Length: 290
Image 1 (tube, rainbow, N blue to C red):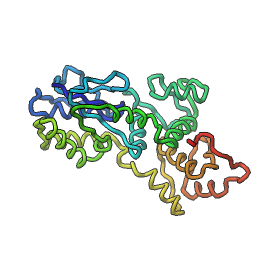
Image 2: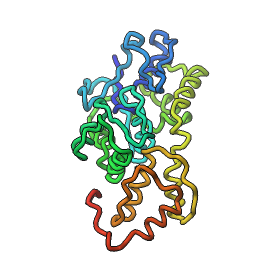
Image 3: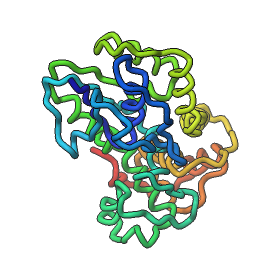
Image 4: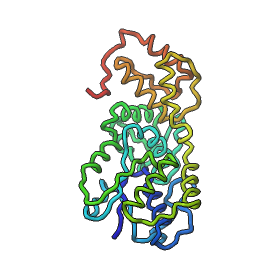
């Protein structure tokens, strides 16, 4: 019987299928690596895999038989920042450059239609950096209704006879990942060979995500602001900027962050902006949830 992996795009469903199929004790051997130049695990075709596992996006492709065993990759609110940083630079196996002052958004980009409708422009022609930052900020500011969270709620409502919920954050930590493998091994009787090769494959997977080395950077800067500590803000990515902007606007609902391509250079500059934001500009931010 096939074990079905249900997951949202970007939550490493391809890698999970590869890892389980490669190290399962009763499937044909796989010797090739799945990694593309962008770090995704989409490098192998279906002919490389057995029928012991499948993967799909249930909210798009439909659900498999709920009597079949399932692994559902889940997302929590605290995962969104890291997940979006990973996903936004490589949509549909394309390299999306988010560092430019003008960013072209391809039609295959998941948020293409939403950006086009909300801002009244065709992003395929390019939008200023501050527009994409603003769009991402809106998602962080209403995190419970963020796209990833909305789909996750659908996934958790589905009833199964035999299911394991696999937190996406476990992919980003070697100890937690191997613990999850042991749980899956026992639950589905996979006879997984979790030796040196398995360890090296997951270590290779982790090395392909530089964002993991800085996954706490934006939150550390917010902590510095709360504690009134001045630190220089390094060159952070657009998603981190959006996250910090969201924190400012949700913490200070009468303060709107500036729409500029450049970002603050220090936490002191952010504190000064908040402290000196003119009172006669104060009004309820219309983008915040009630």
